[in-house]
Length: 320
Ligand SMILES: Nc1nc2c(c(=O)[nH]1)N[C@H]1C(S)=C(S)[C@@H](COP(=O)(O)O)O[C@H]1N2
Ligand SMILES: [Mo]
Image 1 (spheres, rainbow, N blue to C red):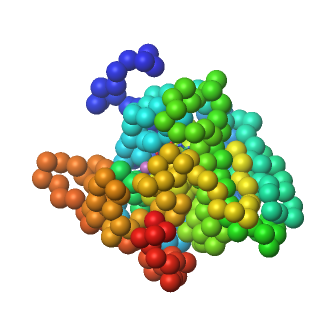
Image 2 (tube, rainbow, N blue to C red):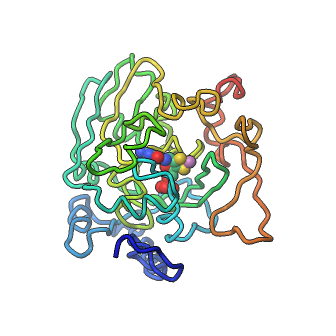
C-alpha cells in the first residue's frame, strides 16, 4: 500500500492530525499560558506515550506571525529532504523508515563542555514553545509553519563555547541503509549547514523538535532540526546528529555544490537575484490558483527588525 499513487482525497501517510484537532489544541495552549504547562518530565511522558507518540505540549513563544499557517497537509507533504529523493513528494513517501529512537546529537568542537545529548534530554532541556514562522525556499515558494522548539541559544550556553568558536556547523544523519537519496550524488553527503555564532544564538534561531503541536514528522527532519526563518530554507538542516563549534567558516553542502548560486549567508533578500532567477517574489504554498498573484518577498523574509543589525556594514551582494 505504501507505493500506490496518492490520490488527492487520500491522506498522506503522515497525516495523523486533522486540522480540527489542531484547532482544539490551540485552545489548550491558552491553558498552558495560564500556568498549567506540563513539567518537562510530564511532557516527555506525553511525547512517548503509546498511541500518542506524536503529541508535544507547547507554550506560545514570541516572534510568531499572525499570518494563516499553511495546511498540515502541505507542510508535511511538499518537502525538500534530498536524503529521501529530490521530488517534493519523496520525503513523505520514503522517510517513514527513518529510525528516530534512539537518537543522539553530539555537540562538540570549540566548547568547554562537549556533550552527547540523547533526544529525550533535548526534549526536556528547555520549555518548548510554539513559534509560527514564515519560511522561504530559495526555489521561490513559501509557507507559514507552526514550529515547536526552543532557542538554539539554550543549548549553546550549556556547552560553553570557547573564544575560538566563531561558527557553528550542523551535520545531518547520512545512513545509506535508511536514506535512498544518498545513492544520488546531487550533493556531497552528509548534508552540512552552518551559521555564524551570532546567528546561531539569535533569539529567532530555533532548535526544532515539532510542528503543529506534534513531534516532527520524519519528512520535516525528525527528531531534531534547525530553523532559521530569515534565511533560505536550505539553511534549516534536518535530522541533525552533530553540532560542531569551529573557528573557520564551514564549507556547507549547497555552497560546495554551487558556489556561484548558494553563498554561506543565504539571507532572504529580494534585491539579490539567484543567478538563474529573481528572488523578488514568492508563491505561498496553498494559494497557488490561476489568478493568485505572487507575493513580494520581504528583506530578511520579514524579520529585518530583528536581524538586520547582524549584517550592519556588510555588502550583502558579496556576502550572499
Ligand atoms: N538534511 C537536509 N536538510 C534540509 C534539506 C535537505 O535536503 N536535507 N532541504 C532544505 C530545504 S531546501 C528546505 S526548503 C527545507 C524544507 O523544510 P520542510 O520540508 O520542513 O518545509 O529543509 C532544508 N533542510
Ligand atoms: Mo529550499
